[in-house]
Image 1 (cartoon, rainbow over the protein chains, first blue to last red):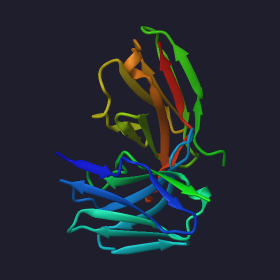
Image 2: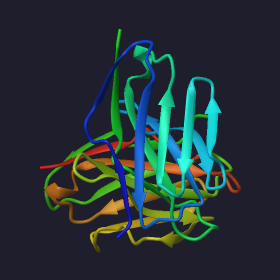
Image 3: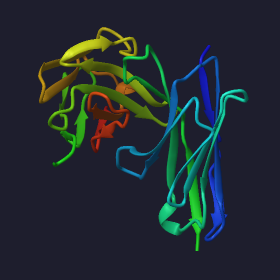
Image 4: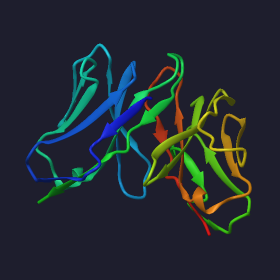
Length: 114
Length: 113
């Protein structure tokens, strides 16, 4: 069956370090993968999208990689700050090509300590 | 733009009561999604609409759940009768045609006693 896995345990890192979050999937051939940020009591907010034919995408301090052979995406936050503390969700596009349906992972909570 | 608007923000009800959650998508967006989020199951898609038409309701847990989108600016998710296991945060999201970024509302926290 189709499955998306993110580290269920919280990730604790020191300010200034690089945070790396993992998203693994099975039995999918997604056209693209997205990363969202969710703060407590709020809805998810879109961060980045990477397509199946792209290896890497960057946006300011964020970097996403997508390995369709390993069926894995890595999400990096460089020079992390306490304000980066949140839950990060990966999402794969499901369904046929003309739909916007997304399947979300459970999310990984990141805590950046000053 | 005010973003996706959901109401109420919090709802506490008793088992067996009818619950109606409301969503106003971003103006001009033609796709609307209803999600449910719990600690155990994460963020699950319940149903989504494209141009006011339900496209995929395979995530709707059972017949107690129903959703409507009578026009481009309004959608409802109804639970009748509600049960304690329906307690969760329900999110509405909208999407503009030709794009991939979903915009989420603030959610409705539902507690069924």
